[in-house]
Amino acid sequence: MAQALYHVADLPKSALEASAEFYVNHLEAAQAVMGERDLVIVLPPAEYDHTDWRRGLARDLARDCAPSRVNVIGAGDEQQKEALIEYLAGAMGVTGHYLQSHE
Image 1 (cartoon, helix red, strand yellow):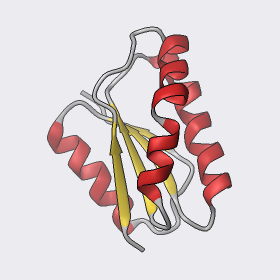
Image 2: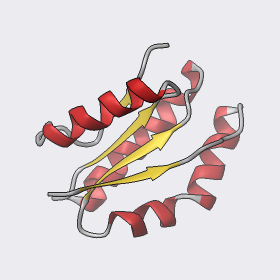
Image 3: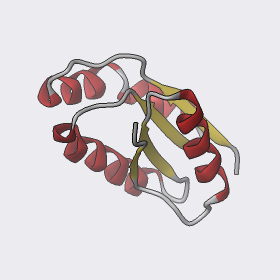
Image 4: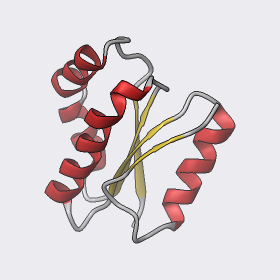
């Protein structure tokens, strides 16, 4: 199955504000990009306090969109971002996960 990408370039520094902004301004657009394909949502890197809402996003969207796969990545470095996207393209059993690159 083809893999769609949805990129978010910038989010607020606060985890609560970032989560709210994503759900208000990006959720519907990400779902529209997905269609019937698998989806990788690419978010900018963030501090540890963003991990919970990002995991919840990946988990809940994956459940809602099954059998299509949904994963969320946090990566700032272009090479690491591309490596995560490539990995997910070939990892057909991986869905509902938040993966963050180490910088």
